[in-house]
Length: 138
Image (tube, rainbow, N blue to C red):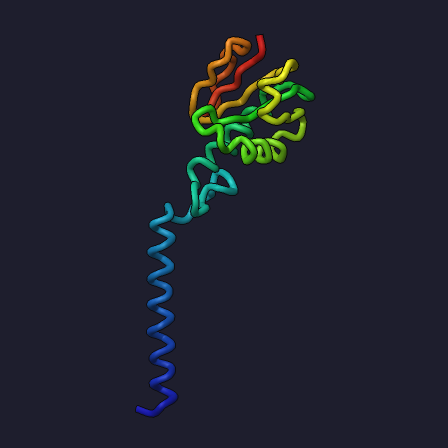
């Protein structure tokens, strides 16, 4: 067996091994299929990211154009800045305000929550959406 034949055999075995590992990874991630959102197959927190994008997509359809909106996860208020920036990109027809507006004298018209109930007497439970709820100011 000469050197060229040995190199070709090694390259073929390496390619087959790489193909097998790639197929295994695809199967572990849910197999081939259409992702529901751009975050559906990401690494760090795909489920929460996907839930946030699906909730905002539904909220964007239901909320009136120009309404002031804040997007929060009441169980994780330390992430308010991230939720604010995500909402800015996902709700172009509404006026997204910072969560600080909830403590001000002019609260937003709607609060979109993710994964947890929102307890504020100024808001009434309006519409359940995927992984969250839309609350309307009373």
